[in-house]
Amino acid sequence: PDEQETTTRFKANALFFVSMYDHMYQRGYVENIPGSPMCGCVEHMPVVSRSDCTQTNVKESYTFAKVPDGTGFTTAIDSIDLQFQSCQGANNRNNDLEAFVQQLVNDGKLSTVEQDIFKTRVVGDNNCPQAIDDLLDVHGFQSGYNIDATEWTYVVGEQFEDHKAILDYRLFHEMVEALEVPIVRRVCPTCVDSHKDIYYRRLTPMPEDFNLLDTLMNNWFNANNTLNVDFSLHSTFLDAFLGTNGWTFCNYNDPGIGFPRDCGPNGKVNFQWNSYSRGGGDANHHAFLLPADPDFQTTIVYAHHPTFFGMDYAVQKGTSTTTTNANARASFDNGDYLTYASANFGTAGSTKGIRINYSKGGNGGMVEVRLGLGTTGRLIGEFRPAKTESWINYLTAYFDIEEDVEGIQDITFVSKSSSVLNLAWFELSDFSERSEVHSRIAASEYSDQKGTEFGTSDNMNSFHPSDYITYANVNFGPAGTTDLILVEYAKGNTGGRVEVWLDGTDGTLIGEFRPNKTGGWWNWEEAKIALSADVSGIHDLTFLAKGSNTVMNMAWFELSNMSENVRD
Image (cartoon, rainbow, N blue to C red):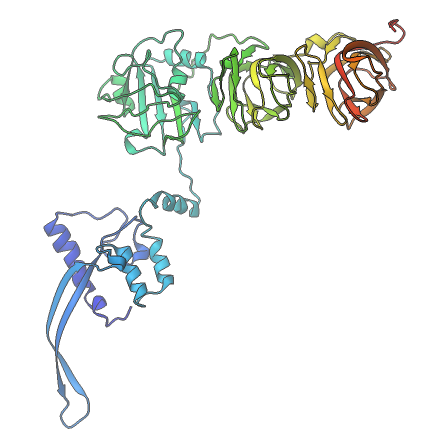
């Protein structure tokens, strides 16, 4: 600015008025903002959302005298009158530095480049969070919380992807009950100050049918969970340990809203809750922790290849119950997921796939199978469910997974399309049912397919050209053992053929079958498919439809040997 402009010449007076007289003497302000100088250019000031503004009004009186015997004039200041008032800003917004800067731009006294510099410091209402994130990003920092694993054990959280979650509520209960004082801590960098660090102290034993983990994560209900009866809340670990300075307010019983709903130290505090099944709470970056106990040993024995019902999930997003099957989960749409805790895969290679009991009333879609919680864990398998006649008709399919998975793992089904399936149950499998050479395999026990459908008798139909159906882990036995496939099929038309492929349609073609008309789509006959190659060992087997129209329906197939098979 012009050094002779009045507001520049009298800026020290303005500083004295604002800081010493108005703020300290009149209002009692005696401390500066940390990191902020008392006097400085705007680019040296801390970031704020808005700022008050005081302008200096100057009235000066001068005497001009002509220079004797020369040219020009001499001047003298007779009097100066200074008055201070709220800045008169643009759009009649007074006492607002942002509006005053805008008025200076409008008057041509400040450039837009200078205004942009100003806006990096006075960012406007509600823009501080973004300004903080931008500043951290520029300097290579990331907001968050570092968990000291020597002091605290991570249980579960959001935006803590580098930590393995504990989703088995039975294990969680054991760990809580093993503590000298049963305390669960929640840290939340995105919460208000009163809720950044909360300690839940359990006061009563947990009943067998009570799930504290789900209560904290998704459903903060008061059954076996009432403030100052079953638990207390505290703002420090010491208070929780000693049972002092407990919180005084809690509410409950809003499905899908987790800890601590609107509980507060002295009254209701909104939106500081977490949820793993719905949005709306501010605790979208948080972690539940337990005091570290290096001597803890669980007593739980995890069954090898357990069966999980659809309703046995630990965490879910978007799914719902169905009135036709009490064990199933429905409304499984794109992006929804179901996570199941503590599946025992055994030693590497001992789990080869998953048996899944499901229903599906439409065509298309895929389910991903991942390790861990949520949609981003390691992908170990995919399943493309065929239509099962209707949403109330369930069948059991088999699909293979990566065979190097071992130990106790959480497993998640992720939907990649709308209404992908209803899930009744699933179990890990070693495909022992197919360990015998020449075992009969039902058509419904497929691992992958495209375009097929299944009727109420679990027979495959709607097998059109380019459709395929694959069966995993089929045992051909030693070399020379298998040279034939028996198949039970039905066909109500003529034409079309079936190609038989080893290890997928980009593998090896080992046979071809041209089914004859059987007199109707539900008139079943057995046929033989001679193999063109000597196949040994365990392979995936694929039937690929070729030609035109519907090629056939299929009930089952069975590997065989020509020399031993005498059936026509």
